[in-house]
Amino acid sequence: MEKPSEIFDRDDEWNELVRFARLPQGGATLGVVSGRRRQGKTFLLDALVQAAGGFVFTATESSEADALRQYGQALGDHLGEATPLRFVNWDEAITRTMSMASRGPMPVVIDEFPFLARASPALPSIIQRALDPAGQRSNTQVRLLLCGSALSLMGGLLSGAAPLRGRAGLELVVRTLDYRAAARFWYIDDPRTALLVNAIVGGTPAYRHEFTQDDSPAGPGDFDDWVVRAVLNPARPLFREARYLLAEEPDIRDPALYHSVLAAIADGRTRRGEIATFLGRQPSDLAHALGVLEDAGLVVREEDAFKSNRGVYRAAEPLLTFYHAVMRPAWGDLERTGRARQVWPRLQRTFLSKVVGPHFETICRNWARWEADPDLLGGYPTRVAAGIVNDPAARTQHEVDVAVFGRDDQDREDLLAIGEAKWNETVGTGHLQRLAHIRTLLNGRNDIRADRCQLLLFSGGGFTDDLLAMAAADPGIQLIDLARLYT
Image 1 (spheres, rainbow, N blue to C red):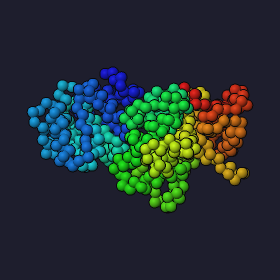
Image 2: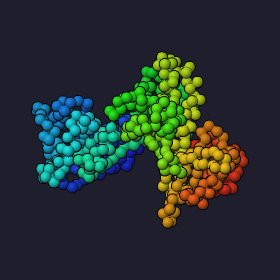
Image 3: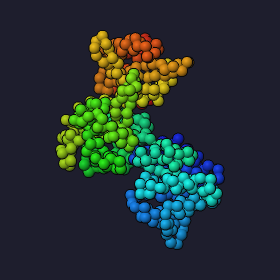
Image 4: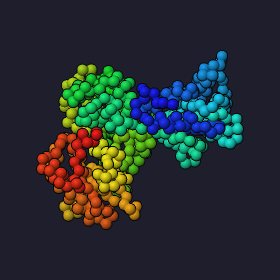
């Protein structure tokens, strides 16, 4: 079953879905497909159903009785029934569903499953019972796929003591496109333009098709005009999308608090104490809000590279950072149609420092973790993070943008490399000397093995001639520019 040409990338996801849909074993099987909104989950599943001749039902936010009515109508239409099927309860509906694949394996998709599960909390248990040995006696080869974007609920379906734990033959997470795939998706060849666009819209496919109507920057000289016409234009859907991302999360009942937390993170207050100070609250007051944002996939907590009990919070969706750092402070002006062209120039400095700079650091870490040649790093990277290194003699601390860890032959953790990332600076020997000093500090610690630690310098603005000469003579110094990141 070939992947349809209109599906970009997603080869691994498509192959897993096809494998699951074709499972030859008898009886029904369960799969769970999740991921943040706008990633193309429904697009993938619709294509699978069309290719395999299955059935798809998209739930809406409704009562249990209304949901059963809608499900009966859709299933009856699919089966060619003269009148809609009527189900008294979900037991009847699931039993009928499991009998549909009498001629061989057939995918059956229930999209937006969290809507049904909230209206009918017993539904996962009912599906579990249908998959038990007793239920399987009357089941056919239905390949039931439950899909949803409410990550906390979808993740909980198969965890802990949940009824469906251990029942799924597929647990597929449809993630955002990585920065390289996103550049290809937006048809952007220039690395600098690609990174600037990625710092705003990330790798969410819908932002190109539905939200900007395939409007991509024509080149480096068109980026500012693109921001004005496609992002800061109140007539375009992308303009209010960041607000709706929170409104669509059912567990977020106090949007003002969550927006404030995200605003603090976008402002560079990434530790819980810093966020609390920004909001005028105690750190303990934010545990629930930060947990909800993590469960919703909107915020990630990253451990400090050199101290496991210390971590930072970062927005998982670049558009949220862009909105809170750039758009929200100027919202009154931007809401007035035609003002964006006058407002954008004064917002660019904030955009570069609070949005692009941190995003560039994230991409550099992703490059080191997933794209860099292990031979270049001196080993396979098993962990990449940012961190803080204490300098007792100078009574100061040094930030490390990229710390790459691997494992040696005795399976001990080894620091392979440390790196510094500067988006809008020309990187020179001063940056190299700073990294070398940090390496010396790390070599003096008993808890870190840094014997093979290389020095990585990332730059969006280029390198000085003397640094280029030093790197050419020393393989322990690696210079990574934008072209190398995107090659």
